[in-house]
Each structure stands twice: as structure tokens, then as C-alpha cells.
Image 1 (spheres, rainbow, N blue to C red):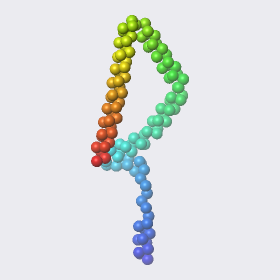
Image 2 (tube, rainbow, N blue to C red):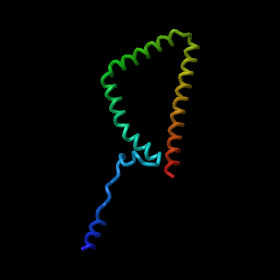
Image 3 (cartoon, rainbow, N blue to C red):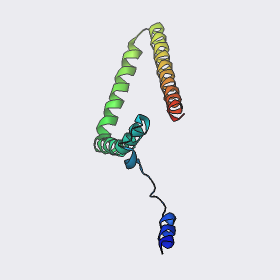
Image 4 (cartoon, helix red, strand yellow):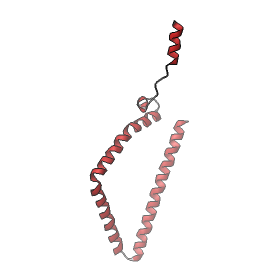
Length: 115
């Protein structure tokens, strides 16, 4: 009879782990990953809710700002307009390069923590 009870105990599969199981994990990587998984849906929901409530206002502000910038640039001499455009392109290129670098660093950090 004891053998049957032991056999039945062996057949029970452990419960699958979820991110909640890792919130108190001693491994800082797993803990941080679980915390991020916990917080992300709430942050996304809050951003979507804010944007949906204020969508028209935000879009109108963006249109007005773009219109004002275009008018101010159009008032400049042609050489300065080219200079402004060149600076804007350089700024955008630096921004994209920094984003790529951050993403690369994040990927390397994640790979390093896994090993």
C-alpha cells in the first residue's frame, strides 16, 4: 500500500511557475524581470487611457507646434534654413544612434546575466 502512495506522489507534476513566483527571487535579474512584467500592463493601460482621453488635444498641440516651427524656419534666410535642417538631421541621427546603443547594451546585459 505504501508503494501505491509513493507511486501516486511521483505522478503529480509541479505547478508551472509564473512571474509572480519570481518577485521575491534572490537573483536580481529574475526579480527585476518579474517586477517589470508586473508593472508593464498597468503602465501601458494608463498611457492608453490618458492618450484616448486627450487624443484630440495632444494632436492639436503637435500640429500647432509643427506649424509654428515651419513658420519660424520659413522666415529665416535660405542659408540659415539649410543650417537648421542640417542640425535637425544631425540631432535625429544622434537620437537614433543613442537608442540603438541603449538597445544593444540592454541586449548584452541580458545575455551576460543569463550566462
